[in-house]
Amino acid sequence: MSDVLDKQLLEELKLVMEDEFTELMDTFLSESVRQFAEARQAWQSSDLEMLRRHAHSLKGSCGNVGATELQSTCAALEHSARDELTADIPALIEQVSNQLETVSEAIRAL
Image (cartoon, rainbow, N blue to C red; front, top):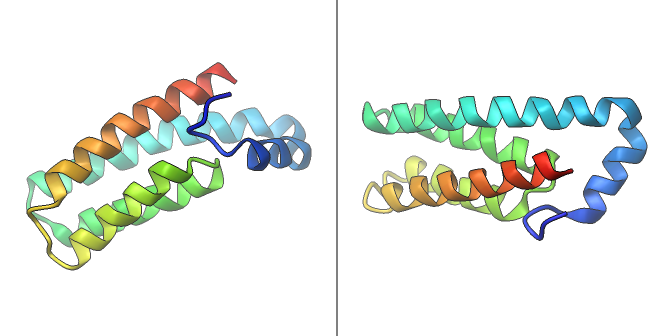
């Protein structure tokens, strides 16, 4: 398991969810890609409110699977969109993209 995921949280999830753990991880993989694509599209459309909403949703999903660093970056993206800090957003989107790829690889390795 990689350092990009909270090992303790994942172990607790496995115990609680049992057979549904794999489904949770699969759902995260598909939904996070969708949420991020929609966030990126919102940015390209200059829709900061939709960007904020998608970043918020992705932030929550990351927390559910123990992707704490990615969760933190999504929170920064959410706040930048809310506060209209447009100069910060491109770098944050790139950072989310890279971290999401790393988290996805770590989840697939489970």
